[in-house]
Image 1: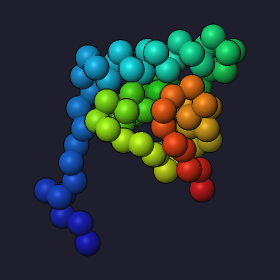
Image 2 (image 1 turned 135 degrees about the horizontal axis):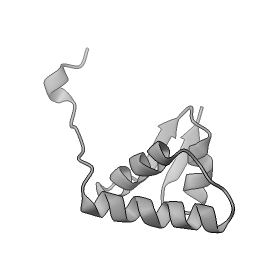
Image 3 (image 1 turned 90 degrees about the vertical axis):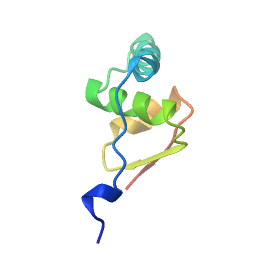
Image 4 (image 1 turned 180 degrees about the vertical axis):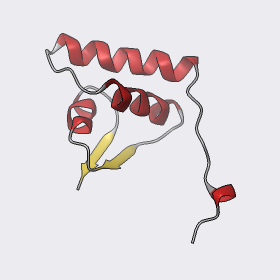
Length: 74
């Protein structure tokens, strides 16, 4: 079992906000709005070096189409 101290919390900072705004801009440009919280999560993930997101949330499929994230929806 994971201890709370073993979980790294990633910050939402200016770089993450800028990345999220690029993603949202691309999505809106395609006429594909998604939940803004999902876009913020993607921005945080990308600026922290994530290459993949695993989620049940299907909005990440569209986010993956306009970003460098590999998305696995289960």
